[in-house]
Image 1 (tube, one colour):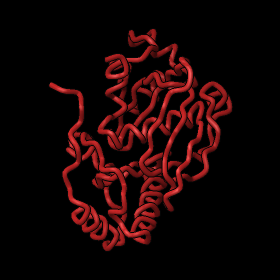
Image 2 (image 1 turned 135 degrees about the horizontal axis):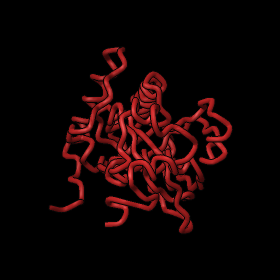
Image 3 (image 1 turned 180 degrees about the vertical axis):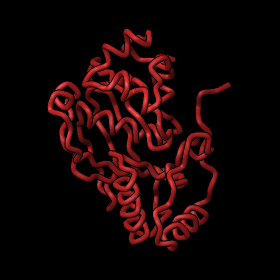
Image 4 (image 1 turned 90 degrees about the horizontal axis):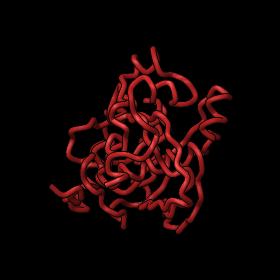
Length: 226
């Protein structure tokens, strides 16, 4: 079996109709869960499938869904929309010790279109992360500590920006979604925990206790080493 995800097959007109139907309800749509095919497809590059006002309304809806969940990022495929679009924002009040270890700093709201990231340097950081599309689970993922992100703004401007620490993790996680990749594809699977068991046994700034107790190492895993 190939590890390459299939391309999304919806036509531009079908995508626009799907988005308009979602916006017309006035309700917050549910977040698509693992097993839905849209999460395992490479989303279509955005090249004008949606008029500007419709794109802006979709981004605002995605932001509301992200806040309601709550989360620090949301990709369009998580609402069933196969477009290379994601929203990011991290304004959570975090324990200072955890924030320092994870290099977690506030991230202002950002919408990214057609993003691609490139690791900078060889340094990786390993921490538990979760996903709104795998409700109730967390696992340890080793990710490059610093990345360069190339993306388009909503108005079509090309941007190149560097992210480090937890912001780099968010950027990678959401960009992976647009390429049919879930965090469990890169995770140390022996670390996989329900939220309840994580809180009971492994919650803390780092992963040393979990690594010893569950028997996993902190290095890259899954498709990251394929």
